[in-house]
Image (cartoon, rainbow, N blue to C red):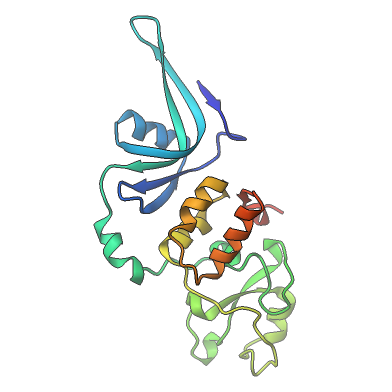
Length: 216
């Protein structure tokens, strides 16, 4: 039996290694398994769920409290060594979230169904399908730009595309990021990152970040 402290049991838990490096999002089942296997070195953040199990010989019912952030034993030495060189996989879902669902040409926000991946330097002109060469664009702007560069189409980007760091990619993959999880990830995101300013704004506003842009 599960008693939820968050809005529902779909709330993801942020897993880190014992050194505090963010690793992944897990569901409550995997979190409970880690607690039960004594793989959790420590936890922090808010309590999300209390999971009740069977009864002991003395009549007491076992239970496991699941927090929003859990650190598991072991360190990701390979990730620690290579995190500055890490390039996350590129897909539209994380691209659109990187850009806040804004068209980087007309500066208007759109639902996901009306957004496209634009290659700033078109593939036909040698452009790569890479983070630094892609921008979120509404269908109208992408159709107008066509197979041209922004300069050739007399269009201007409102922001400079960037490759997310590992911690930024973890944030971008989260479906609903609670304020305490956001604050934790923020400590691992470079201050120079556009995401740092955006997440800081959410924290000052006392908001959780809910991934609503993908469910229109």
